[in-house]
Length: 574
Image (tube, rainbow, N blue to C red; front, side, top):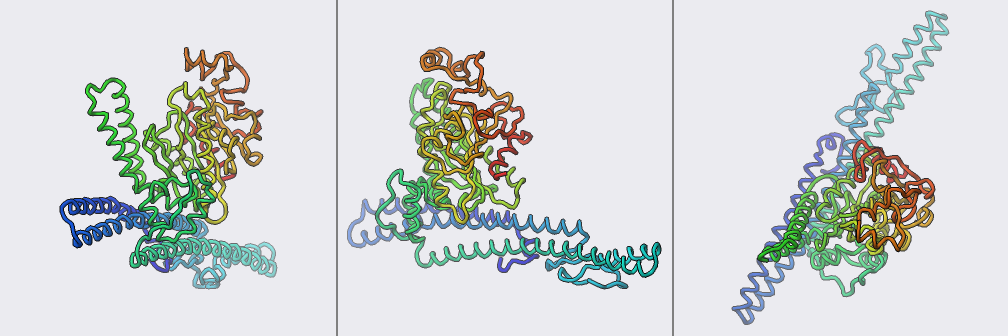
């Protein structure tokens, strides 16, 4: 597409552009297989061939394998580019459809070139038969009719004056309508044209890089482990595009894990690791499967491993397609599994939600947790179609698996530094005006958010807690976000409301004898103190409360629950 116009926009197929991008990204698999084949061939030659020719052949094979490896990030970059083009075209087409609907409702027509006109005119009264800039004929006809009626009642002179005034007013109203629709059509076409030009420029840069070399080795020096996102961002900005591609292709584990590296590069790096991460799980399954007899513990581990593999496969399928595009910002299959996924690009969004799930969350149910973030994002789009929002599933901590673990704040404290760095990273890599950043914690995840805010600070404009057992503070003022931007909701039938505190002397006995009683407390406890502090959904906490319908501990994201609307409105800043 070049110089997008009205007809081109109507004919544009966003799904086709998305499919083309996915096809480019799908080539990374064959590229890696061929690189591995070259490496294997070099190894076999090396073992039985020596001399100058052998050395030259080995160097050539290694160079070819390196070139193939360097191509992979560019393939994913092409996918990102075409996915963004598809997103912008879809928005522009929706704007165009809305403008045409407005035109029809106002009795206007939009011609094939995008010109907006008033309704067809009476040949006897051709005044204003032009395009958007001309006076609309409908007002003249309406004025003539009104003038005739007034003349019958009050005389010819009065009728002429009334007709002239009515015609002028009606014509003016239609003129405003024409101008408004014309502006809406023009805005939609301009959005599509700008997106087309941006995509063309980015793809042209990739084409130029293909001629000069996709990648070149990065200079020595890497950010230290745990470096601040601002330091990482400065380091990354000092590299050339070719050096960045080299790092993505040769050190994906480093690039994919660094807060402060732009979202697009982290996504490229982590997608390159997907196959290796799955191979790790398969290798673990093989090690467990050869144990004879397996025993009950091994059987449990095999079932958990199968669940993680299923979760990873479902996540991989989502990464391969769907709207909005998903960006893989972190993946660790060890233990219960950790993952960070963004829906749409946070670096270019106006509003960014970070969702922290609670107890039992892991790689096995990451697709389901991502679905919750997606439902908030969908509601944001419905409420504010003109704003771009992104949602992140942040599961980069060891969530409790059992009630005995959930009764301690230890895992929440351990997660604090990572959540702090991640939010700082979103600020550091965002393009343009700062986005409104909201962090949402559910269940034990609300404690993770609260403890991180209290002990480390969070780069957030608002905090939300749903189904919370307490967030580790006694009052909203301790969380360090702007006044009035701490929000909470609790369903009337959420059992978390029973999570009452137990003193330190009684806690070990309860944990040892009755874990459920420990977490849910004694049935005769009253007040607003929960297991981890004052109930954030109580007015005395100092935050703001939005309503939830019934749905238990996990029903906040159901389509008919007003809590879903509430979450979306907080994200939007309403």
